[in-house]
Length: 126
Length: 130
Image (cartoon, rainbow over all chains, first blue to last red; front, side, top):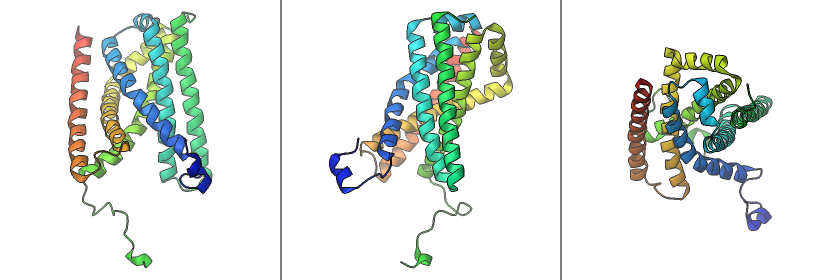
């Protein structure tokens, strides 16, 4: 995202700040409709049992939107939590360690979430 | 400038809070809370995929007082972070950065958060009752 001029004269972020800023906004924009849809979907599912939830996730549209929601949410969360950590933790080792843990945890959760959705959508789970 | 003359960051004990700064730190707090809420979403999905018994234990937890309190907190955080996030996206376009607009937008965010949370819970409770 950096302009060739900006890179040549060395202005702006020295690391990956532009990508970070830009991806935070892209995921934010995606999360506006996705989170509103999710709230409405959950309201309709209040009190539902496991079978009704699985039937619901078995439809293509909810399954696709859930996967998109999971990706956007955990990407946005990892970027946001990284900023919080970098602002408040000043010891380099602890800061780097926490950022790595947050990244790995977000990756693990998004994989777990997507796997659950896909397994319900294709009906392979018990 | 001598170091003693430099502007200092706010001393929180004697600092007079403003709407703008309170909303700013709440945006961050809500974001952290929502990260924890996202884990619940995954737990719920994995439980539903695992079967009725696993799902029931999540449903029981969410139906408990603690579960409902957490759900209410996450609803509030979600709508706050959503409304204030849109305010941030408007700022990113370079608009609404003057003092009057930041306060007007801030009060809109407060009102919108309250209204959306109320509507969601009224809708949720009537969905549960039906």
